[in-house]
Every structure is written in C-alpha cells, then in structure tokens.
Length: 388
View 1 (tube, rainbow, N blue to C red):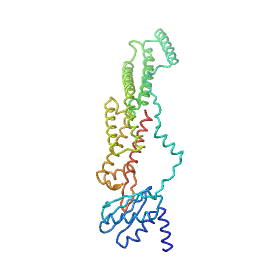
View 2 (view 1 turned 90 degrees about the vertical axis):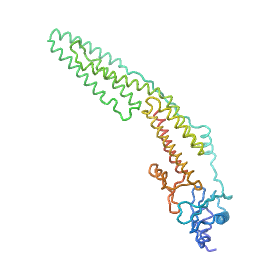
View 3 (view 1 turned 45 degrees about the vertical axis):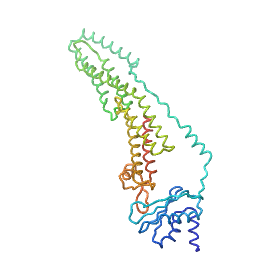
View 4 (view 1 turned 30 degrees about the vertical axis):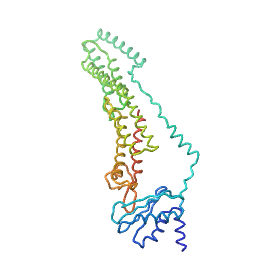
C-alpha cells in the first residue's frame, strides 16, 4: 500500500466523507460507477451514480463491508443512494447502522439542565390586566378653573355695569373660541392611529378627549351670549369619549378569550421543542385553527394586536404542516426534497432557507424546513405574549 493510500485510509477511519468516497471509487470507478459522499451530523450519505440503475443489493453489501472495516466511531448511520444518470431523485436508498459508533459524552450538568427544562417548563410571566378608568381632573386644576370661573363671573358682572353689552359679548365669545381651538388641537389625532386595536392608543385617545372636554367645560358660559359651536364641539367630544370608553371595555372583556387561545399556541410551541409525530402535529394544527376561529368571532377581536400575531403564527404552523404533508406524499425514501418544488421555492424566497447541493442539484432537508418555519411561528407567539 502506498504512503498516499495509507493517508487516505487513515483519514477515512476518522469519518472523512471525501476520503471514504476516494477509497470506494478505487474499486467502483472502473465499473462505471461514480461515488460521492457527504456527512450531516452523525449520518453519512453515499451517492452511487451510473449509466444504468446501480445494483442495490450488491452495492449496499459492498459499502457496508468496506465501511465497517474502517471502524469509524463518529458515524452512526450510513444511507446509500443509487441513481441513474439524468434522474432528479435516487432510484433507491437503503440505510444501515454501524456497530463501531460511540455516543459522544454528555456533560452531567448539561443533562440536568435539559431534564429540568422538560419536566418543569418555564412558566409564562404573570399578565397584568388594566382596568379601564375615567380620567379625572386633578383637584388642583379643578380648583384653579373654579377660581378662574368665579373671576370671570365677577368680571362679567362688573363689565355689565361698566361696559356695553357688546363689549361683554365680544370677551365671552373670544374666550369660548380659544377653548374650542385648544380642544380641537388636542383631539386632532384621535382615531387616526395605524393600529386602532392597540390598548395604549385607545388610552391616549381617552386622555386627550377627557382633557378637551375639561377645557370646554371650563369656558365661560352666559345665556344668549355663548356661541353655538361651543355646545356642538362639547357634544362631539363626549360622543367620541363614550365610543373610546366602550372600546377599552370591549378590549378588556376579550382578555380571557385571548389568554385561552394564547395558552394553546404556547403549548404547541413547547411541545415541538420535545418532538412530535406528523399525525399528532396535524391534530394540533387543527386545534389551533378552532381556537383562532373561536377568538375571531368575538366582537373587535380581529383588530386586537395579539389576535393578529396569533393569526400570523397559525399561518406559519399551517405552512409547516403542508410542507410535511408534501414530503410524505412525494417520497419518504429520502430526508430531503427538491428546492425547485412549489414548497421548496417558498421556503427559499419567504423563509430564506439555504438549499444543500447534492450531486449538483439543490435540495432542502425536511428537518431544516420545519425548524425554520416553526421558529417564525414561535417568534409570533412570543410577540403576542409581550403585547398582552
């Protein structure tokens, strides 16, 4: 055996895919069979390609005998793929385990952390509920306004005695016009927010409307001398304030329903960390759809920011289910599918999944696809929890 071949054998015993492929090519290339190999984790994938469909039984036996002879400790399973030149997918695939594989040692402290995480999952932080309340005038401000009003009345009485009725009318209506202008400036942005379902937006609108109502209420009023716009503007503000208060009450009434739906989404998110079968996952996705539809039937729910986040999370979970279903219905003999397929293209364009190059073609591993989509769903669930 030459020194170069000895180096190749030594490298192959360490689990190097290129070295393993080189050793196999030494015997198979003269027979017209091309060999390529690559590793993913503790699995070794070997691709055998020839002008005709490679003989499965003979080549799997040859591969198993040769690799077991190398006594590789870092490879747990070997999957052999046979493909005729020109085929998009392997014509056959067979997998076997190596008896020489040695499980990597796990640090005891890490094992304890993982076990405790599974047995005692992290509890969600307690959610503080905000009870709607009417905005009251600060006593000191109210007192100041009373003093101002008394002063205005006293001044008005004096003005009636000393000035003409026309001068008094001008002063009162000027004060009222100023109050109307201040009130209109306060409420100019009420109801114009991009997210009207945001509770913070509702409360800001409530505060501005209440302050505007207070300003109009403090304006001087004298029968026959007040301008009609003052009463009209005050009625308009009170109507808006009533609508805002009802919106806040409706928002708070939704919280129990939202918490129930959010708990169900969070439970699925946690379960996926442990692992779930295709059948169980399908049932969970259908359960999420039922919970989301139930929440959506509540008045004002679809405008709620938490509902919108859960709706986006569900769309991610549903897409993951469709990808999984497509994989099962197309071909389960491989752990990947074509990146040029309908779902493969969406994973690349929407979720930025990077395909793997296998024998000159682009493929996406199922576990990569699912974990990427589930990660997007998990982020939306976290966003919903933060907003509640």
